[in-house]
Length: 336
Image (cartoon, rainbow, N blue to C red; front, side, top):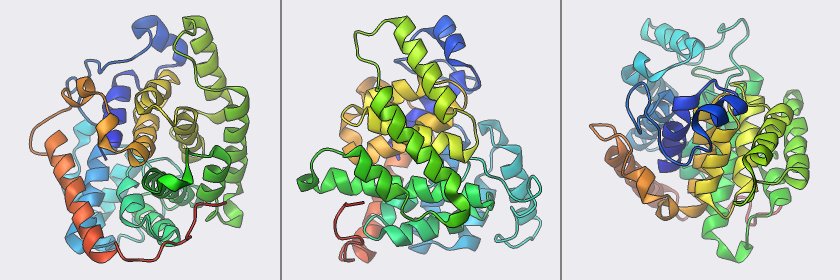
């Protein structure tokens, strides 16, 4: 959850810029920049992630009506909510059932990444039963993003967080195996979500032929790599572009969470969300202890800032400990 916050805050100041523009204006972004709401502030990515976690804690599991009401109560337009999400939440506030609120957004429902960016708490709470994580991820997506490709993005992301957490805890599994990892995150896809299968195959390709930049690489080489990743995988707000790109950024830098976020932000486009999702994956794998202190110290404080997110994560863990700690592992081993 801190990884979501960090990626969000690191990427937000350059959201919408292309890799060349980022390099020209800021160089390689290694530190939090000044932003429209201040250095280290969060956007709707973190706010909705926290709201979902609040609901999971309060209801001790997923309750669609409660989660939707929590999203509505936490809506703060200054945080940069997408128009489709705002419309869905306004429908809920007007009395429309949560299951129907997103049905007519953009005609047939949104396939943006808004339900994937917030889903990390689902992957955490249900990490011992990946099928349940997939189901809950899809259900919470229906509140705002009910297009099959929006729902699938949330399912893939929740599975990624669950698998990353289990891999980080079950040390006998060894270092992350990208092939096995990608096989697992795609296991719950349905026939009408084949676009994600294609995207995950592109991730495999890019991991083989476009690995993460090395510390000594030139600025030109870094830019060329960023432009290549963005061109092949995508860096916009469509879930079937940005979710696989976040998976790539995590897997290409699996041993270095700091570099995973630096890499994600360098790709341009929807930088705050791609980095937020990358941060969720890296944080689930490594835990909070490896995030740089210089980043953590600059995160937004206040009533729902860094300390609140850390406390909320602890509350989520306590609910998991009470309800799910003894749940048999499904699947029992991390094998694709």
